[in-house]
Each structure stands twice: as C-alpha cells, then as structure tokens.
Amino acid sequence: MLDSDEASRLLDILGNRNRRRIISMLRQKPCFVTELSERLMLSPKALIEHLQMMEEQELLKSYLDERRRKYYYLTGDIAISVSVQRASPPASEGREQNGRFLHILENLRRLVHAREALIGDLEHLERDIEQKINDLYQHANGMIRNDTEMDLIVALAHSDLSWEDLQEYSSLSPQDLGKALSALEERGIVEQREHQFTLRDVHAE
Image (cartoon, rainbow, N blue to C red; front, side, top):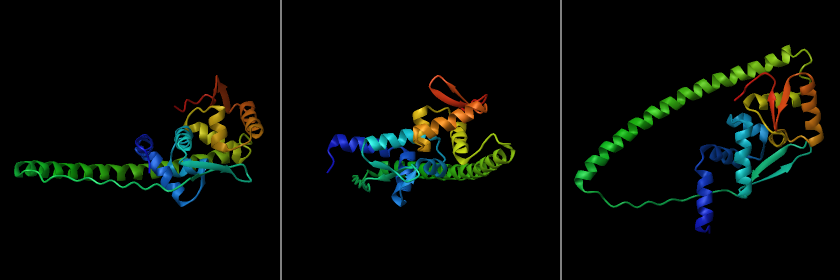
C-alpha cells in the first residue's frame, strides 16, 4: 500500500501522457532508448529525461546487452483504481449538467477529429524523414561511414545534446562514442559548443 507521498509522486509521473506511453511500450517487452525514441516519436533529450525520472522513482530498471545497448524494463506493473461517488443533483442542476455534458461531447468529437488529422500528418512526416535518411546514405559520399554515425546524426537532428545524453541514447562506451564524435567533427558534420554537441551550421531547436 502506498503512502500519500508515494501516491502523489506516482500520480505526478502518470499525469504525463508520454510517460504513460513509455510504460505502455515497456509492458510489452524491454526496449532500448533508440527503439523507444523512434516508435514514440520523442526527441532523445525528452525521452532520456522521462526515463531518468521514472528510474529514480524505481518504476524502471535497465541493463546492457552484449552489444552494450541499454534496455529499460518495468520493475512491476502499475494498476490504479479510482472510485468517485456523486450525489444526485436537483432537477435544475440536472438540466445544466446535461447541457454541459453535450458541450463536452461536442468538444471531444472535435478534438478526436483534430488528433486523427495530426496522426495523418505525422505519418507523412515519418515517411519524409525515412526518405531523407535514405537520401543521406545515398549522397553521403563517405561522409557517413556506419549506422552508429547515422544514429548520432539523427539524434542531433532533434536537438543539441550533451555527452551524457548521447551516451544514454546510443549506449556506446565512452571510447566508442568519443571516436564516433571525433570522426564526425573531423568531417565537419558535428561540432561542440560549450557542453553541447550540434550539427554543424544547423540549428535544430
């Protein structure tokens, strides 16, 4: 049984839709960071912040596979039961509530239609992004030499990231990450600005 402080922290975590989506994916199977980012269409930076918060609250744990990819999994399933009991309203209030109810239904329908349109737009964008990644491979002319470099470039296309963010996202060892970033810097693809890495001459934010 959770005490009030633990229940409040859990509700704060579950109050965020993206964290609920992460939990839903991890209910199916353990996932590594890149997989979660791609399937949930979340930026690496935002995803890492969500994962770290849930790991601090011991909702998630992680392990490294033989390829040093960091997998996250749920420490246990989460089930919340909410019971609300309402008294019957007077007749006049009942009519007002009925009007509000119909108004909410109309707003719900409008929002659902708007969401469907956005999902359609996102599917088009995902196809466009995949095409651009394929174009990068075709026109790289040796500038991008392996999948690791491409993964780092795609991550930095979302936003500028720190060394720690990139290591969390890629699950590369410090040595391998350093080699990959140095190679991309030497070819003029990536540069470091203070404590952040960014695509050179590209403002992703």
